[in-house]
Image (cartoon, rainbow, N blue to C red; front, side, top):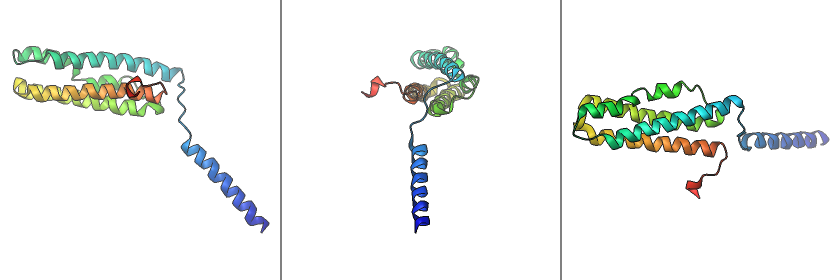
Length: 153
């Protein structure tokens, strides 16, 4: 009987430790490399968001050449994001949203190249989606780092 009691005690202790390890909050403290990545990401996100907004607002039916000039900086969005290197593990949701934003922006570039002003509404729709995903990536950054999110309160 004593052996069964010891076994049950060890089993319960093991389950308690396993539950803690699985359910504990993630470590949100970043090392120097992680903080450097965040600084680079914030600069990249601000620049990319300006480019997306400039293209979405500035594109119109008057000049296909002007439209191409406005949207051209977005053709290598994913590549420019990849140059930042991999994010810290706790920031994977930031990476996912940023990659989704780049996917939308690059698709807008392709649509514009293929159809020109005939696709202006579709191009702007995808640019708007890219803006939304960039906003989401910034929100994910704040949440992942445990910062307060004024937009949710």
